[in-house]
Amino acid sequence: MRCPCAVSAFLGLMSLAESRSSYVADLSILAFAGTPVGKVVPFNGLDLYVSMPRNKSEKGPDPMRQFGVLMLPDVFGIQSTENMLLADSFARAGYITVAPDLMDGKPRTEGSMSGFNASEFFKSHGPSVTDPKVEKAITYMREQMGVRHIASTGYCFGGRYVFRALGLPDNKGVQVGFAAHPSALSDDEIKAIKGPASLAVAEGDTGMLTKRRVEIETAMGTTGQPFTMALYGGTPHGFATHPDLNNPVQKAAKEDAFLQAVRFFETCHILNPILYITDMSLTFSEKTIIVIGSASGMGLATAKTLLDEGAKVGMSDVNSAALENAVKGLDSEQQERVFFRASDVTDRLSIRNFLRDTKSHFGKVDGVANFAGCGGHELGTQSIWETSDAEFDFIANLNIKGAFHVLAEALVPDFLSHGGSFVHIGSMFSLQGFLKGAVFAASKHASLGMVRSAAKEVGDRARVNCVLPGAIDTPMHQANLARVPKDFPAPTLVGKAQEVADVTVFMLSDKSTFVNGAAWSVDGGAGL
Image (cartoon, rainbow, N blue to C red; front, side):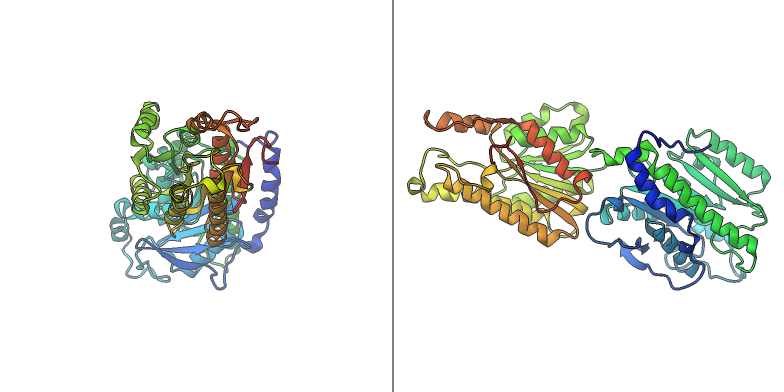
């Protein structure tokens, strides 16, 4: 069964696929010898061999970083030169490649089988020991490297765990799998997969003779998933990683198995509309976003939109009663994806605790939007010489110091997931003056300056942008209109909270990965 490819419907993807398709015909990217180019990275007690695609840095948001390969090695582990070179080969095919040390630094020694007890080895490295390592590697790829879609390739011992990773709950496992001569693979593990799978089988594999191959093919046919299964004649178990290079049949088989994996990933991983198009939309099903100032108005509209897109949302506001009512107004399913607590942006510890507790609750934070701010008590009523020090301090404390607190706490290294997004809500008056609102305008200019400075500081790991609304019909806007004199010039262009929310959500999404340090006006042209 072949993977469905909606080629005609997705012409925009064709150029992407074509730009990568040259890789799969170029066997020069498959290394049989040489010096590995990746590096070993420790992560929460697990060593990972990480190999990056050419022309790609480990730092900085990059739309193509969303594609990665989780390589699960055989019993020789990541310490094997051949296994490291194979990981490098997948990186040269365009994928961020991560191979975990499944053997805790104690793999089988390459060479003679003397002294190697396979039964004891598999018993001591069973699922209860190995599954957590695989899941930790997936977490590293998603949260530290910014990889969104993960294909997994596994060999011998690692092949079984490709299928187990394909059977993990949605958003926690891998999406596509390839396994060469997998060991100890059960029918139940095959039937549990939730994504396409491809198998490379050795004719001479004593653990997978004709009867077992038929059983595996039958089990795969019950999954409802696209699959391929290729039999390599004249090959022994292990040919896809450790062939006899003096045997042209085995050498060619390793080449073909590598191409089988990459082509399968290309076909199912990129052109499949379910696996790829979904990722290129605004979907937030795998994301956690914090919205500060979300009890009403633009902040609440943004939180609701994120929840509609599938996100988990941390909601906070200084008005605890309004915040609680806002959460109660959500449907029950959305409430389950909300963590909320009152906090005050003028109190740095309050913001720090809320941000950290939200991350602890959900496990990660991918973005923060800060709507907290005010126009003061006298906006539109007092000239600069009439403005008191108390009014200045009130506005500056909330709009400048408050913005500083949220920026400073959210942009601490390792708080946001790699490639995360911070959106500060400023004002059209971040770029111009305000009649009888000098301090308000000054505070909004200041916050924009902080945003742009922060964007320079963290651009290698996160995006920081500013949305600049004009007059927006919110409770705060209505309160301001009720306060100003009747002869005060009323805005002729008034937007809706949802219109600001839509832009903010876009800035938090993976469709704005090349936007950093920007000021996006949402004012209907009033600021022109």
